Image 1 (cartoon, one colour):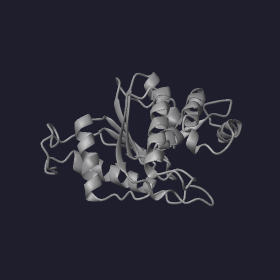
Image 2: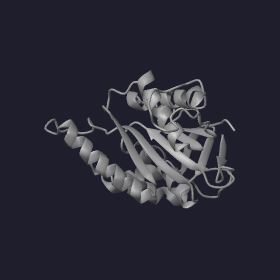
Image 3: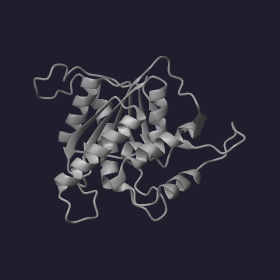
Image 4: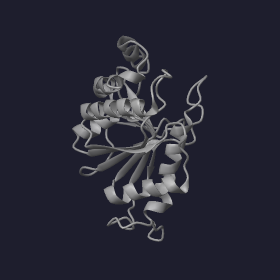
Length: 243
């Protein structure tokens, strides 16, 4: 695995983060996003659901939870310096990587023309001992991978609609998959952990432990790496380069 402080990019990049729920970007790769923004890259979010089922209170309606979680996501994204946040409003828990969703993701990729697309690894079904990865996470990763290749860059993959540019193919340069059990790239992000935690805490409805415990949990994940005399905070990805 390549442990690095430098992606090797020339110039600034347009980066599109496509994940299932509000709070996924911050939990999965919030320190990376903070770093990219500080380096001058433009980061946008496309969230496939609004996290409508993310409440333990049965009295909360789906619409109430969605509104709360959208607001939390906008606050978190602002803390990281994200350029724009869009939602597709699919129902939390019912996400399926079918052709209809693939077409929507292809459409956004072609219109936004990102250099880098970020999602999560669809193959990671059991992320840790005693845990099952949320099916929406796996569905999001699968539809993103399928949309990037071969669909978005294929001129024969046509989408019905009158939107200008919808059928202009776009080839992304790289895909970065977070929440992976097979990482090949790790970014050293110790200096960005506090920004990540601040953005996570913006999702108040989803934080069920004290803030001190949340911080301690992340501190426990520091790793000793050859390039440093002190343990470092890493975020790990399966990085796929096309260009």
